[in-house]
Image (cartoon, rainbow, N blue to C red):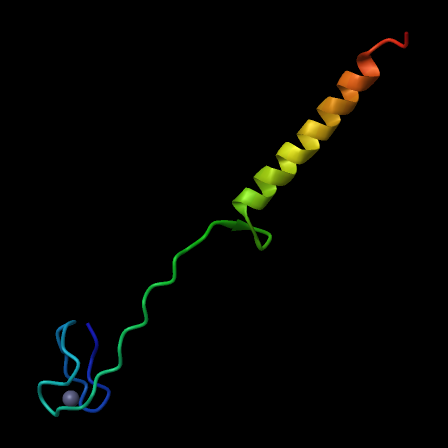
Length: 69
Ligand SMILES: [Zn+2]
């Protein structure tokens, strides 16, 4: 619900001009999509890192667990 920057009158959302003084109304900024981030990285980066380290450590354990022939 933007208020007119000129006269401060409330205008409906769909109005582009103030109904009172015909001043062009500023368009309300679209809400930014909130993305969950941890330390600036998106969640999928951490999941990928976790999977990568899990895979490598598991692989090392598996390889070292094999008795030498
Ligand atoms: Zn106005």
